[in-house]
Image (cartoon, rainbow over all chains, first blue to last red; front, side, top):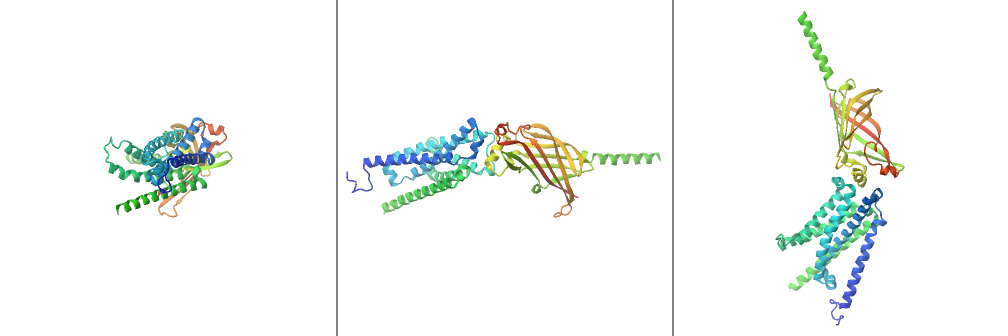
Length: 224
Length: 197
């Protein structure tokens, strides 16, 4: 196979290497992100003991995992030429669907693990708990996104209607999760974690915009 | 003559009884200049806080203490120590358990004059639906016409009381045993109340 003549197609070997490198890179990145709460410890944990402490720690890590998976979800959904080539559109779509369900489960578990130690009767309601309420809005968004996608045919939701809100709701979820993480967690009040989140948000938005712009350009060129 | 005497006696009786049973002067809280503050030890430092939302019914006349009363109702959820996470922890079952017990109250049953403008307000403090007897010493700082609102009198009260939070069911002692949060809470009540002349 002559790869030099077709720079846009990759050999199977190269594809395998890219897949391994991208997957390993993502896992490395994820483990780095999950190290943030232990390095920039939140004082809330100081005042929890026993099962409450374990649940709260679990809730923090799951929340952070959900945060990264939501970013991954946006990147996967934007796709782009490179990701399409490496993983293939069908596999990306499968990953997108699976990740969506996983996000719902992780978000639900995160909420329970964070709220139970403080008591479900003492929900953080009111203006001063606005970052927690942003999290609640995010959960509603995730439920709508995952639910409407999973049960679209069962509830007879027309594809066009589903598509018209699925993408904007996904971008809204990205914004909500970013605001939630930046303001709800003491760990992310520190400069480096804050810069990390803002940088990740900027890069993801830039990636999505560039992919969409390229796709739009190609579509216009092909219609000429 | 007998009729006149009887009429005068009856009138005197009516007037005196109406004086005796008249409620003491009613006052409205000036919320912007009233507060219920507290401080508690945290290892070595003092953590200060206050309750943003509370109501107060005051009937007070130094000459009619038996007809005077104070009734506070405090929204536990309005606790504010300037750190939201700490407020959330204070509202949890570790301390106030505000979901189950959203209000605290203090209703006076007796007010006595302790001299020099100090009044001992004895009543029932209800925390987590359990009643405790409490005496809140309140100093009447003065009564004067409000400098910014003609025709209205303003009265000021300040008072401090120290209570044992563990004896009042606010926390189970875990953080006290750890040496983190003290058990004695200093409560400072500062009030301005208004009444039309």
